[in-house]
Amino acid sequence: MSEMRDATFEEGAQRPLRLKALDGDDVQVISALVQDSVLPASEMSWRKSERRFGLLLNRFRWEDPATTREAERVQAVLCIENVMAVRSQGLDPKDRDTVLSILALVFEPGEDGAGTLRLILAGDGEIAVDVEALEVILRDVTRPYGAPSGKAPKHPE
Image: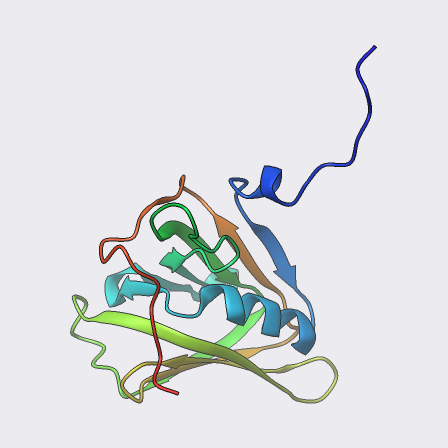
């Protein structure tokens, strides 16, 4: 019989993320994980009849800091449910090749569970998603790969 022990954090490092945000605190966790994600504008989709807005991100793996190996990214789907409207500012809707970089997600609650999820983008762009009820899902869909730059993104302090 083998000895039982608790799993370590390191053993879970290669597992794909599957997270759901149902309130503002949950959104802060997902925001930290999608910070510096990049995507071409063509990888956003609003399915109005399904009330769903989705993005296919190239997400930097902040949860697994590269200390002994190269920095990594992973493709992930960010899905926002219960969507009533989507607006953007600072983006050209005709330019589908523009590469967007996500700086943060911010939830502004409204009445009765409704509110607006703001995707703050580099370069003063923003996408505002009005939701009837907050439900945001982040799910990794590929294995991690080496970040093309080989480094973690940096921000001026």
